[in-house]
Amino acid sequence: MPEYGSLFVCLMGMGTVFFGLICLIVLTTIMGKIVGGRPAPAAPAPVAAAPAAQEGNRQEIAAAVSAAIA
Image 1 (tube, helix red, strand yellow):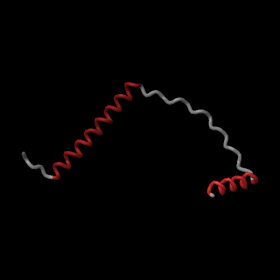
Image 2: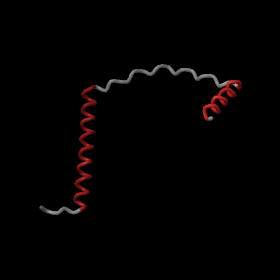
Image 3: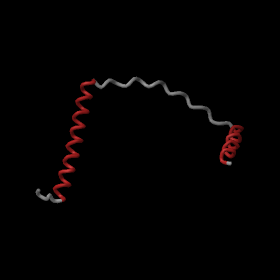
Image 4: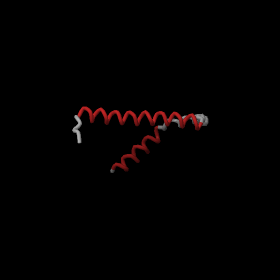
């Protein structure tokens, strides 16, 4: 059995990986064309942001955080 050099083994390994990746790209492209690439449904309108916390709520939030840490 012939002994292969490390450079040959490295190049064969990388070649095998790139060949596999190219096959995946081709198969994915073909499957995309077969399925038809349906567009995604439209996203619902964004919800308005919640109003900023009031000053009274800050003290309650600070107390709750302090209690959770303790």
